[in-house]
Length: 330
Image 1 (cartoon, rainbow, N blue to C red):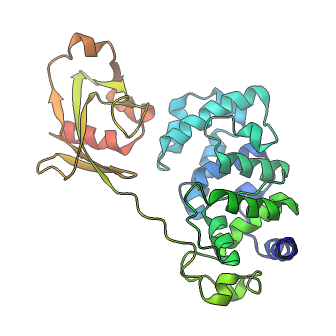
Image 2: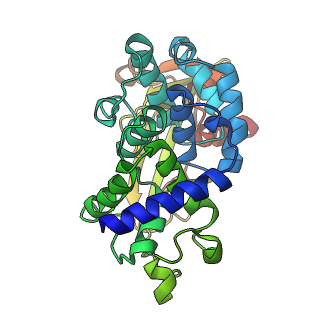
Image 3: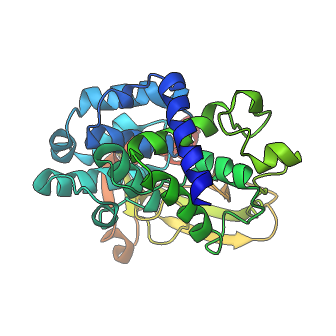
């Protein structure tokens, strides 16, 4: 496979140098800027990310400025991207990185909050040229097609095979260009639907192209079954304030400040509810208890009273905003 890998890497480098997009995080190899872009790109498209990225970097131009900012300000700049746990982890890791500087290896980066296998390898390679491959959806699609691998790529069993292939390509260096080339190829040519194979630098080596398997590969990941949850948030109000509690009882928005209440899972959606909201595979049916009485003493100790106008800074989730709008309009 080595000879084939060498040919693939050479043609990929030539193609990438001629065809790569001019994206704002490719202007230099600053690890902070690369890190922010990679975290944002995990949840949405390049076109959607660019304005968020530019606003975020204007507000937090350095890792030190991000570390020193209050979490509420980070949430504010992250609003609209979703997955707010990623914003919290950015803030935590920024505080560590501001003190120690950026480690240059994926192994060291992996120790930081929010740095999973992909992010740690991406930053180590793109910023510091460590010879490690990256595996995102684009890369997995390209690799399974070029080698004709009918593997369940979403399972832990298949990851070593894919990671080894990505590592072998990256090892032929420079890894920062080869990894970006792989991701670019998947994003612009080897797309999920209707790939433009005739424009691909790898078409002469691609098993899927040769055998007519491009639409069959990669294999389709089974959809995760949606779960039905009935949430009864208890809305305690005191003037312009409302009570929140650190979430240790609901399977969504874990560890974040939400309304106190109760939750249960059931097989079918309830017949009556006030609102519906979806978070990943959780279908949340909401029955609001708008309470005028004070919370019981044992519960009151855990509550934090927050001004209603400040809730979005503390927890920017649309779920809380929907509940508040329902309460305030009733």
